[in-house]
Length: 393
Image 1 (tube, rainbow, N blue to C red):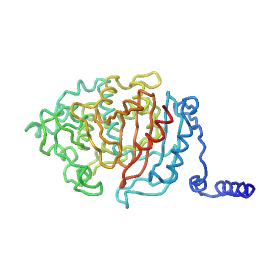
Image 2: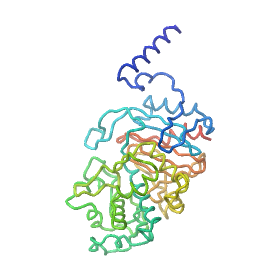
Image 3: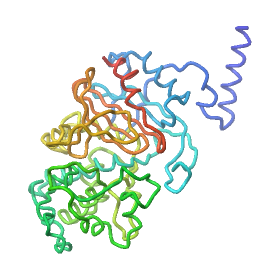
Image 4: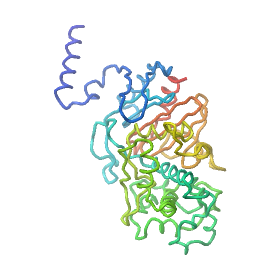
């Protein structure tokens, strides 16, 4: 019996080597052994689970559960602890395609070289760029009126909108009427989709909306607020977000494979959900925040900006995010916040379908997920609680 098992295993390995059958298909029902991430020339240091004092048995259990489909479609899981990448695993799954059934495009074997659609994680990059623009002196203060940077739209500066500041956009407390949580993201009734099909440009689409709350007083999740930030960045710096982020964020981090791929019919780049990045580069963004705005000894973002990204703004607390298993969370400068009894304070950039950069400063750790659970509940927080935090603590 033992000899037969060995022969079957050898046959499986040969099949994997000689055909296009995936690793997941061949080994789906066999044990997974923890493996150290690959060292590449991308600036990320590599470590072992043992060096990081992580119980690799929990990591193996997490990977096996994902492979079995217990958490539906997860494309990657990466863990970074003590400034070293200690886990990096990729799985099979679909690319993103808005007009495909379930928003799922081609079936692919994900790997470290493939940029992934980040969805609303892109919002946090818009925020980072505004923070850098302050650091570089292009913007004086987040307390400035948005109309200081919108010269072509002064006709909308009335009925209380004149009191909206950059900070209100960053914290989604502008007060503009906006709804992208009541309708599915396949419907033009959803404002996040309707903005693409409007006969107005995206800036007008947002600014012409009425205020339903005084600026700074009420959280309303809004990709429209992020689009205004992109226009403010362009007018303050003379650069669109793709050029600005390349020069001031991605190049200093050694990130080459980024793509602001999603644009409106009028040419504007979508900052609410239009960025693609590899999971390893998502780790770099987490590391930038974990190290209070410093990468490789160079300051890119102020420590104050990192702090404001990690602490809920005013009344932005007790929020339930549709389709997530996170429970009640807070909202800061485009980063979500949560307290956990094991990890302490955590904050994270979050995108539809299961895209996450999770920063846990008190245990010096980052976790990155990508996935395609666009029409089912994302249960990555359960993975965090059941496997990752017990492994780390």
